[in-house]
Every structure is written in C-alpha cells, then in structure tokens.
Image (tube, rainbow, N blue to C red; front, top):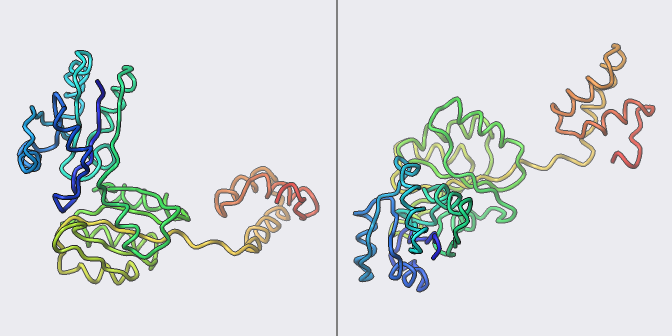
Length: 278
C-alpha cells in the first residue's frame, strides 16, 4: 500500500475532493500536523481513522514509524492543516524517505492556496514561481530576495500576518515598487485581494492584517533588446586599461547577467559580436 499525500481545504470545508475522502476512509494511519484540527475535518465527514502527529518539529523522528507501517503493507495518508502537504507544509521528507526506500507513493490533486492567489492577483499567470515562506531572519530574507531580483516570472510568497509589514519593507527595498497583490483568507468568508504596488500594499498593512496571506509579485522587467551598451562601454574601457580579457568577461558576465563567452568573443573579435555568440 502507498504513502499518499492528500490535500485538505484551505478555507471552505467543502473544498475537498471525493477521492480524497475515499482515501482518508481507507487509510490505516493518517499523519497530520494538528490532530485536533484534522479531527474536526474528519469528524465533519464521518471519518474515524487512527491519527498521528506529524509536523515540522517532529517530522524527522516520525519517518521510521511511517516506513515501518509501509513495510507492513499499510496505507499511510499524510495531510496538513490546510492545502497540499509537501509544499510549504510537512510531507516532503516522508515522501522522499518512502521513494528512497522503494515504497509506492501517490499525491492527490486538490486544494492549494497559491494557484488561486496567482489568478486573483491579475498578474501574468504563467510562467510563475512558487517560493513560499522566506526566512524569519532579516539578513537571510534580504539575501533570498536579492537572489530573486532578476527572476522574470510572477512570484508567489506566503507571509505571516504578524510579520507582514516588516517583510513587505524588505520586498520593497530589494525589488522596488513592482506591481503586486496581497490575497487574504483564500476560500474563507473574509477573502480579500489587495492590488497595487508593493509600496501601496505595505501602506495598507501598517495598522495590521489578519488571516492567511499570499503575496504575488510581478517578475523582473525584461531588459531592452539593445541593452548592451553599458557592458560594452565598460569592457572596452577596462581592456584599454590593460586588464585581461578573461577577467573582464568573468566579472562583467556576473555584473550584467550576460553570457561570459559572448563578452569574451566581443572583446577578441574587433569589438564585434559574431553571429554564433548572439
């Protein structure tokens, strides 16, 4: 029998599939983040199966028990408090352990927060990059955002309501006043979407915000097709100063996000880019 990851509602309790209910009814064990929270969902649908606490603080220690159950031929279902386990919630470690041990695994389609958030944002829905939660540490968070600064895709983040203003300050500082949307309480009674620039959204949460939050941010703007003059000017100047071609190419490739071989070819071929280096 497989280890099976099963999405549960992110808001409205009706947002669960018939297949998910059938799999939960037939599971020998249900691993969940909060047994009390999941107990309410299961009770609502008349499901009574053994529950085991499985959350980020004991995820590693529960693996051996889960694998032992699978070894006996039992079906183990993994659910989170809301949405699809294994993304921003516990589940992936158990899934990987089962795969590595050679046990069958399955993941059901179903409720998740980031897909509705992308569409509700009104921003370009594809391609998009799901990032999830960033670090709680300001320095690490800023570094993570810096690494995403040039990502051309629409990006989806999860925010803590208690830290939303602080985190949005970092988004604005690193990414600038891009268009964004803050989607709150997806599939719940007080669902809300606030659209605008990061600066406008930050101003709107200064007095506090409640509920589960998804932040959707537009990707980095495309560079103009002829935006090569800056690196070419710097490359030519540095070459005139006697710097080695290799050093110039390596440093400017990183600085201007251009292929190193293209810069090198331009410097070595009369400052003209050959067709194959385009």
